[in-house]
Image (cartoon, rainbow, N blue to C red; front, side):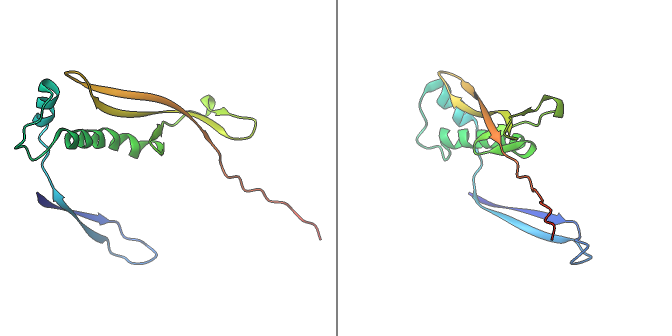
Length: 137
């Protein structure tokens, strides 16, 4: 296990200060994930008892990597990811809500290989609309 440090510098905030703000993030108890462990498990069906990392840890690391870019680039609700839609292709219901197609993705261990699991979902997005009413006195 190891500790890993990341330093992030945020640009200055014009309202509060004129200098950038620096944060140091410490990741405690990190472990190096050797994907050979996962390959051995998939091909033989067994894990070696002396390995520090198990197949489940490898799968969690791969799923995290797989989902990171997608979840930071698109709308995500729960485990579902919903890509953006062009205005002319939006499906707006008569209630004013939007119907949006999305998906869920994950890796699964299959017989002798990794399987990519992709499920399609549909979500209804309700937008809050502020309505003003003029009152005459």
